[in-house]
Every structure is written in structure tokens, then in C-alpha cells.
Image (cartoon, rainbow, N blue to C red; front, side, top):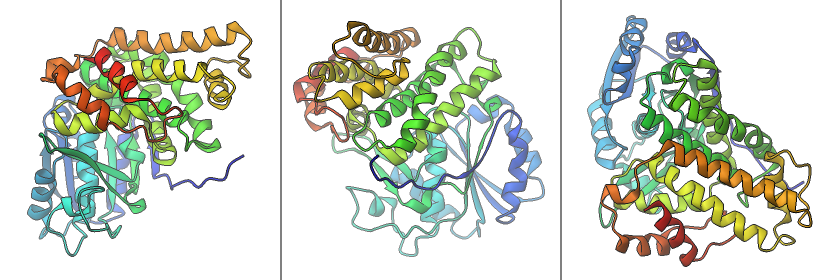
Length: 392
């Protein structure tokens, strides 16, 4: 077994009704609370009023973010709250709200703060200190797993745009409250894109070259949970708390596994596309996922001996004790698993890349720039272009 180390996991409260823990958690840190929420979703869910009422004994400041976080958004929220003596930042919303809250909690404690861009990987020249205001994450979607990670993804859209991380081990939330009730009113389109993002994170981290025994043990159980429940909560059973819980748990696990095993080509491409076009991150990942998996598995099967380790891992998901490349049934099971993921993505019917203004000419640039980091097979620009064309 290879050596590995694991980043800490936040204290977390998981399950139906766990929202009740929020006032007590905030009380641990102080009386001045900055709440970061999405644009309208929390109010539409019916829980916003309940949350504010439960915090009536605190001094509460509220900011809303209605897009994926940009440097301008982060900088504005930080500068507007520097003099409010914030004791705790509590982000309640989807991945954008959580990443915004995480970044704001960090930048409020950077003594030399000018702009968050100074601290972004591959963009700025300053190393984050790791200091932060205590941070509590309360996801209302099941997707990014930001409630378990040490990074916040910040985007600047345009021809010279970027999608980069603000990252430090200390940025892992102090606590996470994961209550599947909060996801019930989430629109089906957002649930679908978010869930496919989480599934992508699970699969990428599972066959990542940086995967380890700990992350594998989590991902191998969470992948079927997402596969077996996501379509149902997007269509026939949106209020099924058991299945909502399964999706929320799998999403949380995806945050732990990506933080400790890394991701592969889906997110390597998504980072490039998301910096260039204003497309929801989950939608990009959901579109690329089935075709990346198809292309990667085909490459693994083309040299079974060399890639036996990864084929064994895929076999574990489909209940085969060990991959035998001389056994056509084992190969069929893995191929059927790929088809299952493709069918799920097809059923969820996300809008294609071209609906967001991506052109065929853009695809070549994406293919060349998109990273293969941690992919078990280094896909060529031609193979990446093939994936992009199918998602186009």
C-alpha cells in the first residue's frame, strides 16, 4: 500500500433536520455573523426566514452572490465588512455561495489585503497566510463538495479569463451542516448539473494517479449512491429525503476525495472553459463526464496489462472482485458501467456547450490548454477534442 496523508475533515452534522444546529455552532465563535447566500434560491426554499429568526440574538450581516465568485465580488464583500468585527462567516447556498464565503473569511484576515487576485494560484504572487475568520458551510445543493475542501474557486470571465483556486489547508470549514431538506426545492436543472459535477469528482478522484486507500474506500461506496438516486430526485421523486440524503452524502464525500486525491481531465478542461465562457461549472463537468469516462476507459482497455490497477478499481464498482482481461464478461461489465453513466447524463439532458456561445473554433483551444493532471492515461489533444465535440 502506498503512503499518503489526509487533510482534516470539518466537524460535520449530517442528516434531516440538522439545520437546527446552526445557532449553536455560530455561538461558539461570537455574536457578529456574516451570512453569504445565493441570489434567490434560499428565500424561495422557505428556509431563509427560519434561519434569520433562529439567529435573532446575533448581529447578522447578509450578502448575496448570484453568480460564480469573481475577484470583484470577493473584494467588494471584504472591503464592505472590514469594520463590522465579523466573528464568523456562515455560507448558506450552492457551491458559489460556499466558495465566496470561504474566500471572504480568509481575505478578512489578510493584513496586506488589496485584492484576492494577489493570492490565487497561477495568478497572484502572494502566498495566503492561512489565517481566517471561522467559517461554517451549509450547502443547499449537492455538487461541488466545497463544504469539505480547502480551496475556493474564483473566476474572471473573458478571453484572458481564468478559473483559479484560493487554497490553504486552514481554509477547510470549521464546521459543515448538511441537511438534505435544504436541497428539496432546488430546481431540477441545478440538481442535475450539481449532481453530475459531484459524480465527476468521485470518478476522477477514484482513478486519479494520486488516489489512495482512504479516498478509494469512500469513493467506491459513494459512486453507486449518486448513480442510483440522482435521476430520481431530478424527476420522479424530488421530495424523497432518503434519496436526497444519498445524493448530498455522495457530494460531501466527493469534496473529501477531490481534496485528497486530486482530479483529472474533466476538471482540467472545465477550468479552461469556465474562464472563457460564463457557463455554470456543474453543467460543463456534467457534459464532459460521460465522454471523458468513455475515452479514458477505452484507453485503459487498449493496454490491460499496463493499466490493470485502474481496471481493477473500476471492477470494484461493478462488483467484480478482480479484473481479468481474458474474461470478456469483465470487460463487458466495465463497458456497461460506462454506458450507465452516459445514460444518466443523457436522461438529465443538460444544455450543450454551443447554447452558451461556445464555437467550434473554441474547442481546439480548449483541447490544447486543458490539463490531463492526474488522469491515468494522458489524453492527446485529439482525444480531448473528441470529448469536447460530443459535448458541443
